[in-house]
Image 1: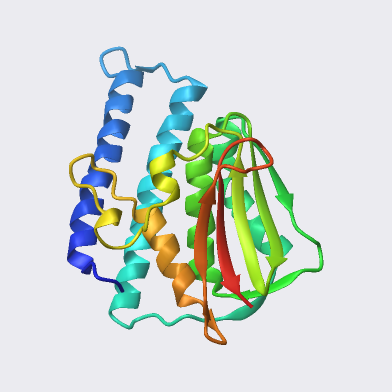
Image 2 (image 1 turned 135 degrees about the vertical axis):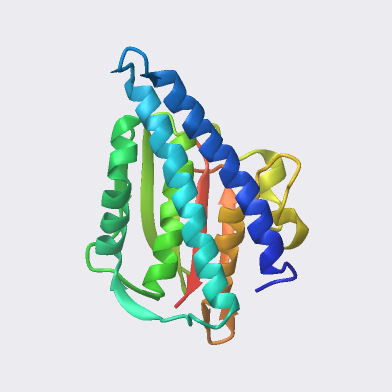
Length: 227
């Protein structure tokens, strides 16, 4: 998988998910009054609960996928996929979270474009990117597909504050992927990097790129897949 063993990733990710579940439980305590059998729940609280629950679910999906890959229970399956349909499915899966946070989503893709990649692995990547974009976006995100220099470029943009400088030049493998002190594992970025590198065509390997040149004014995360 990398110079990190799965047990280290698992231990750090459990710590991260524990924090999210702790926030969910604390929020439930705040909105549910057991004595009066009432519930004081605002749309903002629902959105936060959805985000934290989805974040835990994304982490579990990523961990399970990494475990299967590491133990040779799963092999990369490249197939031809309709890009517009793929991005639409990703949007619909995340629509409840986006709606509760009042975030509009655009899909930018040619209607007749097709790409070659592992559908399940890339679905996990895009779902993770949309979840993160929903956290930092002000009111809109964009799911995009385009071709550049023989690579399929799938990206998620937002209108948030952008990526911090320290993240723009970080290698999300090895020790950079783990941070037990803060509880932030960067598991999603590590997972995206791993999936990109599993796509090899003609000696070319996939890669990821983070920048703050989004046409929406915030951050842009792009995964480049050789075609």
